Image (cartoon, rainbow, N blue to C red; front, side, top):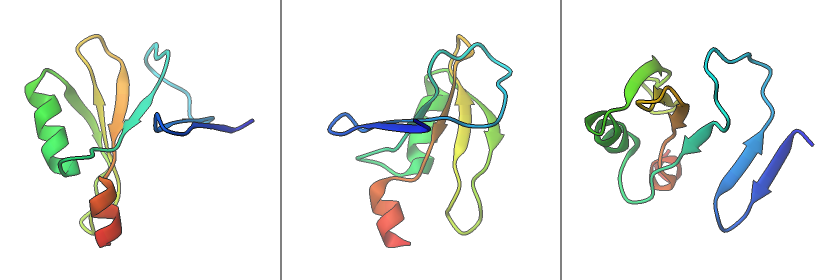
Length: 86
């Protein structure tokens, strides 16, 4: 299947056509629950992550692609509250 969702855990596995430059075993898309996307990106940068691709748009949509200190790539999406607000 191209997608698999584990409800309750909030994990969605999706096949993507793009090739990867890193050795990712799993690519996580994080959706903050108690803060905004911007606050979560800043928190993760302070913990040692690196921003490698900024796909945030002026209208609030998009996401930020980061890598952890070991080079594993992950994305930070808008929170549910930000999505609901528009």
